[in-house]
Image (cartoon, rainbow, N blue to C red; front, side):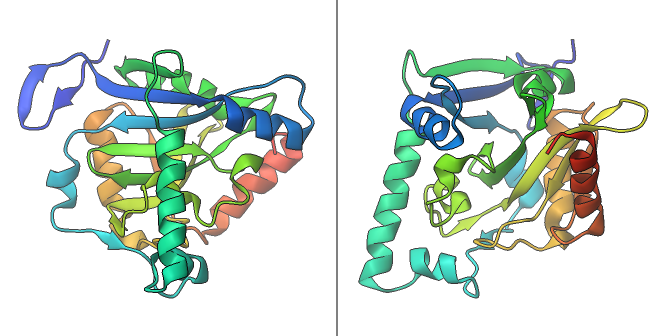
Length: 238
């Protein structure tokens, strides 16, 4: 077992805390739209990472003033103010704690992280996740869930409409030709549009908290991401 360190403390600790919030109504909407049988809870995740403030320091990524959907949320108009309140309500609903709807636990190594997400697979398909780094945690959920299609910005929702975050984008899990699993993270967020030059700080946070994690970082427009999606199409994983 690989006990993880806490920021500034070399003593072993229980692990990295996580929460999974299961949202039945979101799962219901998603099942209806995708013609799936039964109701499956839609999950939002929180993973509490050490070292974020130390590694990112004074760096914050503000919202993207050149992105139309972001302006609709963060702009100075009355309409934008209403949208912000709506987005905050969405966040509170999807991240609300509850005895029967919130699962808590600790991650002790990369295998535990992979298992938590079922290796990023469900029903023989690969899942992609939308994430933000805010405060002391990584907040994320499935990217392609149809429940989110009407959201003005998934990244804004995960951030609780914060005007700036540490980082944002998407990630997925995959194995290489030697069946070594890795997390592939990118900066695909129109709402915050973080620079790819800063993604090494995110990689450092992940590796600091999960030292055995294999991390690959890519820009949102890197041809390798398109190649990965083509491979998934060929393998029937998309």
